[in-house]
Image (cartoon, protein in one colour):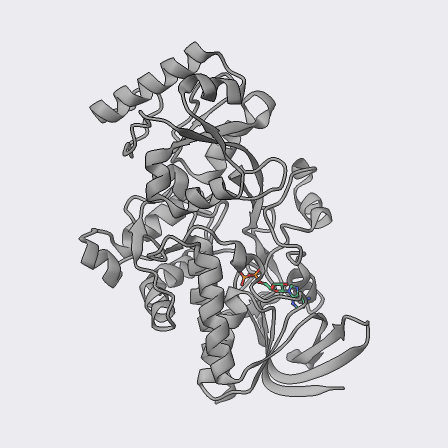
Amino acid sequence: SDKEADIVIIGAGGAGMSAAVEAASAGKSVIIVEKMPIVGGNTNRATGGINASETSIQETEGIEDSTDTYYDDTFKGGKEENDPELLRVMVENSASAVDWLNELGAGLTRVSLSGGATNPRIHTPADGSAVGPVVVEVLQNRLKELGVEILMETTVTKILEEEGQATGVEAATIDGSTFLIKADAVIIAAGGFGANSDMVESFRPDLVGFSTTNHAGATGDGIELGQAVNAALDDIEHIQIHPTTDPESGYMFTEGLRGDGAILLNTEGKRFTDELLTRDVVSANILKQTGGIAYLVTNEVMKEENAALAGYIKKGYAVECETLKDVAEAIGAEEAAVTETMSKYLDAVTSGTDEEFGRTHLTQSLEEGPYYILKVTPGIHHTMGGLKIDTETHVINVDGEIIKGLYAAGEVTGGVHGANRIGGNAMTDIIVFGRIAGQTAVNELNR
Ligand code: ADP
């Protein structure tokens, strides 16, 4: 039967749940609609961390960083195609996003360096666990305390509109029956379309046949729901492939692994790139290698420092190799080639200069075994483009006007990341703009 709320939110990922926490904390009645049997969407799969600048944690660690540098890194990484105003809002609210999550109990107190960042600014749980599930859990706990209703396995099929104003949604339960949720504000937080190969191919015919790192619900519903009420799109052709995914399952190995010292070898046993370049460049460089694959080389020393790596090994993704001879065998290269590559890399780490590829972050000599080798290929990871929004998260229509009562946040939107997203910025995006969506909706309901 039909329902009513002040605010209805489409999607219970990081963006939707952040919006819901803000709106419910301000006393509004909120209903979240989630089509999958679990909450968290792609946010559950965020294994890296959350980027933020000028945080209290960086200060404690003595890390010098600035919000302007964060802006510049992201703008450069996005090939200067980012919407400057949206980007400014994201970086300026990044520190408070981390504080907010930590107040909810996320414990994001470890800071490290990640691809595309000048300074260490990716914040992760202190115990080394993946950021996504932790954030989802604390948001879900808070929503329980606030008594917010989440309708599970329920799919929004339509945004209701009266005279250019969003008035609620139509939704379908798993048995196919439909009902209406009347609301004064609708927030689209339905995520990206990385698991919808038809949509991927329609915007990017060159990406046919790629594997995906996305959860099954990342089908771009939010984009189609928005377009049905005249929403404009931004950056829709920009689709990110993650450089290091398991070729068979699409499982993604965090960029933090390279940040913490891993290198990449091709099947000939040679390095071929500065491993810490942006995702699109590293992906392109892997695709140029034989078979479009490469191998991440890590070792026991790294395993002891990196909980994510320990997890991949435990899950069976890594081949354990006692010696470099075993490494050569595992990747099908000549032993001499691998030995030469590793001794050149050791020289680079020792001298502090990587003459061949210009890698500047040289923390692990990878001198001792046992080694752990992960076979990788790029997979479809993040859809940068989506619904066009303004800095207050209003959805903008094809005539450039605000659609009243309609807001969007998270991966469903376009503009923030430009042509390429820097690792760690998805979490910043969804928390910052999810919160703003909730706040803007509340403010406008109170008018
Ligand atoms: P973000 O990172 O932007 O929060 P996520 O992928 O984490 O995005 O979350 C988006 C959520 O929206 C997912 O849980 C997904 O299942 C849900 N979703 C997608 N389409 C619909 C829809 N039509 N109705 C309800 N929920 C949806």
